[in-house]
Image (tube, rainbow, N blue to C red):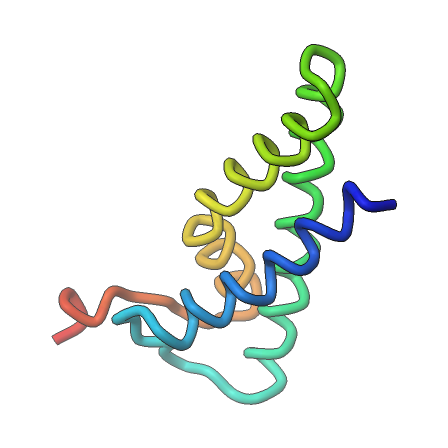
Length: 99
């Protein structure tokens, strides 16, 4: 149970920083599309974490499996957010490229 608390707590902080704090533009968005993209992003993040945790859990101790899986899943957050929001028709672009 504790192994899932770390990525769940980490996700909301990182998602808020990436989607709200980084220099990105979210285009063609409505409230419903944005919420759907965020929920799908959460599901994808936990799916990636779960697979990595299962793979790393066989070869590393539990703490290193949690840390390693959380770090890799967190590094993939920009890619996962692009995929998740694109499913709902929302485009995420770098603000530097958008102008």
